[in-house]
Image (cartoon, rainbow, N blue to C red; front, side, top):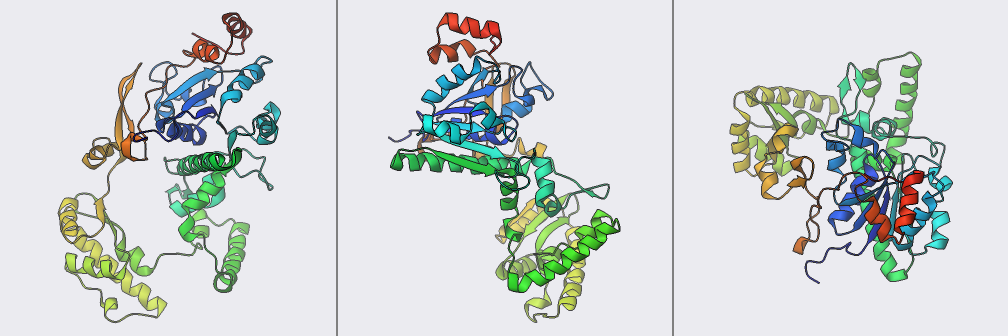
Length: 424
């Protein structure tokens, strides 16, 4: 049916906190799924990070719209009855428990599959379900460090590697999980059986480094073995991180690093240029009124090539400082070259391009009024994905959810009285 949402009539139970599982569940909700978010009695921990209203924070709002929140003490003797009622009608269960907790609670796939053979169970772990680190806890910063992503991003603080504010591995993991869930549901239409979908923050961090995660054994292994040996020597004598990081092979050419794929300081701000192909590089030189002799006389000797592009890069830097970012942007746009002024995140909240494409959404929040958020990242004809409404306050739907699961008023009153769940 035109305009139908792809996850309409799909029931999702989310046992998630922080980012990866909640954002995945939000994507499914934007696609029409009915999502019940199971929270601790005090709520998802991100509800406590600088609240703007009781239980309402920027972190919670950014990845928890479109859900129905049910506070539940998972270790309470009365919790299994509620969980069984939820799973009896669920299509998807999402979890990011600490290692081993799903098995303790009977929410691992091996336990659930015999009872609910059509159920799709999606799990997020830090390092994957097997191997020496499988039972270790981990969050985005730890995984960025463990995976090499922190080094690859190149950010330093007081000479040490530092993580950027965007938790990139978490969000890549959420997108990967959403794709896995959609794939499992598609396969279920063909086979009638559910699935276990495992994704890991470590894998997400490796995907983000995909360009550089290629080793050709014949060409690379001797070099990398030597670099690893030198790295061990540096660490043995306590060399600073910057010296250790200098061993990382550069996957970009001198031409790209120095001239064609970089940022430049302009008269008033900063400009990013991305001219990768030879034709774009020649067009860039023409647009700025410069020449690159290496285009006419290729330089094959590595040291000479390095010196050439270091000198050309210095000339380009001096030239770029003579005009404003807007002036250079107009010149490069006219030549159809990929370039952009470097914006601060705060500028994007009023960015005309983002607004023109509905990349931002004004959410009507019951406690906070209008809240501008990032919209759903998927576009499909007929409005198949659309930003869901704000999730109602913690515990405000407890009675309605339990009634919908078939519990009587007396049973609900007992659950509340005994502390299995809570209501306002």
